[in-house]
Length: 347
Image 1 (cartoon, rainbow, N blue to C red):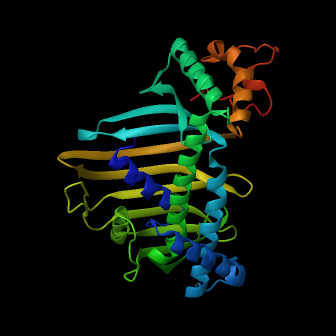
Image 2 (image 1 turned 180 degrees about the vertical axis):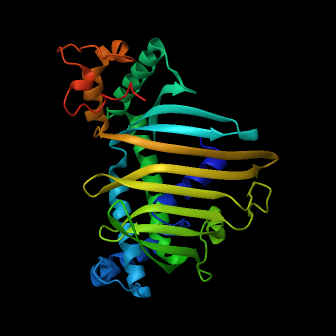
């Protein structure tokens, strides 16, 4: 079970990827928000294409936000079909830092496996690495069995979580006011820069959604595709939960998320940067870390991922470090075309 801090950060980061932090809404509001987004895209979406050098009108800004929301739905629907590498840098007191590099392998239901590749510049030894990957294989075997009642229960849990996150995304246009800042060019892409702050008329509908009344920031959106490239947000007030008894987040917390196009029309996070301090009950907590995400590779459903694991696993121990060993077919893991696990032993 994720701690309160993790749950709050997940909500913030997830909403930030969609370009704006946003609260959860009721089922009725979700339908309204999704339909409103679709209507805006249908009637005004074309106006956001980079053809007019003048500032976007409020209606055009709403249309652009609607495109972002719909695009994020599409990207999130396939994110769990991609494994990836995460390099996490944790910032401690007095400037101390620690780094860990992991290979993240989603099992396509409620979470991901994490294989530690390196910690503080020290590679994981071959025996430990082999054990980790065999654990992934054994557990993936369970998740690949759709008839398993535990798997079905996890699928129901995942469906509930997905609905809640969909509600976060669909509420974006209602929770915030967006303001034109300008256009800029980055990596040969034309970006629209918008600032955002809470809409005073928005009424939070869940216990934790009050946090979004205290968030403001800036986002950069690829104008032609309608995808977010970067968002920066901060808490400008302390936020209390349960009258401050359950938890409190301190003002000054900052969040940033970068996204990149990893395949035509598919945009995923490339970087998270979080600086957060707070308290849960009587205990203080901090979260100061940067997560760099790279080497996305498509592995498909748990059944498809299991087949790939079974194909590559026999050569895993020898390929953990250094020159990769040939697998049972005589091919080298890193040389096999389109091998989704080919870089799992690299940093």
